[in-house]
Length: 389
Ligand SMILES: *Cc1c(COP(=O)(O)O)cnc(C)c1O
Image (tube, rainbow, N blue to C red):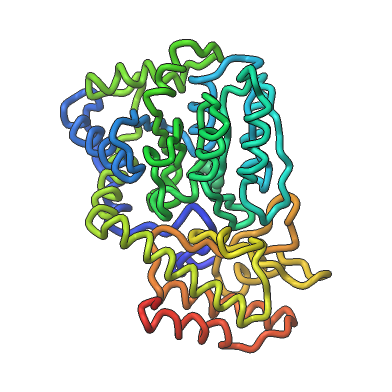
């Protein structure tokens, strides 16, 4: 594996050199105002990326998975019912975590490649006359299948059903790369991690909780200690954590948020859309198909690409690593061996993406797939040279 090539796994993503350096800093007193100068810009910057006025932001030394646990353990009680669709590996894992916490999960099994079934959610919420469902789970971007879901539609399902359940959204592979509107969509918990759109190493769970979610914290009885947001909020008020914060990572996050703000959120999203569209045109030129079934479900941060029946898609990832020192993502769960994934989020340029497409082509030709060298690259080039118009 080369340390010079960019990676095309859907997280951890490529790191800008400046962010890498920002993470690398001398020890400071993490209970001093010096830490406050790192902490508060992080909290404010994350709130802006989430497009929320009033959300409370929590940053834990953890990963996205810890963000899920923060959300459920602080707002729910054993036996509470939650509604969740399973349309990929990440939505599956969140469901599994809820079950292990003793929650009663009403699962809507949804074919992988499809987005969340907002209509089914609506029917189930309407039928729940006594409001036994306390929370609705939604994975904004299913990283296993490259499928984006319509969170506004899930919000509408709750509203038209007149249902008071909390809305929890996993935005680990969308926040910072694709538009996310916490307030407009009435999201009560938004979950992210440091190593995807924020272009950092893994190590931070980033969670936004609405005022409604913060009220639920007072009544929820699931056990929580490390992830207790009340302790964390008390710490923040004194420029501190309830324990030792990962100062270097947070210094990197502060810079990441500055870089995102300097580029402009809309420009960041447009760049992701343009790069993703180039990948999709390449896939088409190869004569292959995406796992995502329809354009409205296409993710701008990751593409899962189906390979012909009888072909082991994992071989593409293995050969790319072995022969070209380049990393792509394997298929997970139900689509293991059937798809390979190209991550195209975080610090990425058109030129970097072309290098990934060029290597993917060489690997597929090496493995005997009927693909013409240069075909996908040319399709993406035509798109990129016009600025994605
Ligand atoms: C990566 C990812 C996670 C898990 O995050 P970790 O940081 O690995 O714990 C959860 N959900 C989605 C959608 C992801 O892409």
